[in-house]
Amino acid sequence: MSDLLGVAVLGAGHMGADHIRRLDRVVSGARVAAVADPDAARAEEAVAGIEGVTVHAEVEAALDAPGVEAVLIASPGPAHREALLAAFARGLPVLCEKPMVPDPAGALRVLEAEARLGRRLTQIGFMRRYDAGYRRLKALLDEGRLGRPLMLHCVHRNVSSPPGFTSAMLIDSSVSHEIDAARWLLGQELTSVTVRRPRPSAGAPQGLLDPQFVLFETDGGALVDVEVFVNCGFGYQVRCEAVCEAGSARIGDDQGMLVTTGGAAAADVPQDYLVRFVDAYDREVQAWVDATRRGLVTGPTVWDGYAASVVAEAGIRALENDTRVAVELAPRPGLYTAGGH
Image 1 (cartoon, rainbow, N blue to C red):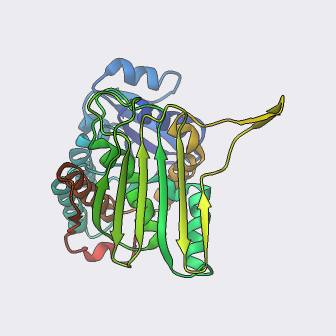
Image 2 (image 1 turned 135 degrees about the vertical axis):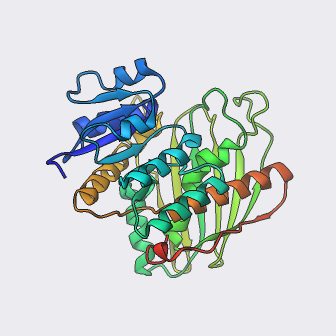
């Protein structure tokens, strides 16, 4: 391996461009070696000023480019399966943004493909596991001082939804983060999903069922509820409260600058997930680079990505059919038994 880990970034959109910036300016021990995106102009703009990077229209060309030793997948979810399989065929370690693969059948194919390799190559980009607040909450729950967790109350709000955002995407795009966070925080699998919804907000586009209230049951007897509201209009807010037998703990209330004047106080509210979770993204990518340079793979597994896809698909069916839907996971391959959630 070279002194700087050569990374091929697949996708130069909002998320991909931010990771290109991060690899070039924030993370140590890595460099952007290649970028693949069908939009050549967008890719060229994302790498402007970065020396030694090649730009490609095709994934395979970027993976085979000189100096590429690892892959960061930040393309749209439906493109992830083939990109992951191509990386596996070349033995390249991968950091794959969520969703790993949106559909459970495709996610299972990726799971089986990595399991056949007999070794992990992939870290899935559930960045909340690297957020300082979530890490403190996880440590507190694992310590056991508050007793067994009984409930998680979660809030996920966005200023507005992008064009083309669907009612199903509130679950498989937005709530997918809470799906993984709940599994990780509790160390339990989610076993069923129920979705309820109030009347749509006047701020939601016509036909979008927003907000929604999602209820998960777990195999450990806990309940997890998520209020997801992607057109709240006022800011990007993520909160989580764990209610346990002997106490509770809540994260996500931290504010930026608080200004008090004229008998009133006002606090900044982040407007974007890249602002709210910038530190988590930085830590996530740095951890991936550090582990990869040591020949290790850490963090969320392909099993975690597969489980999130299955739970999200069950949530979409619960939304569409207005009923409780059971989650049915395939048997967990031995490669992932030690990793837990």
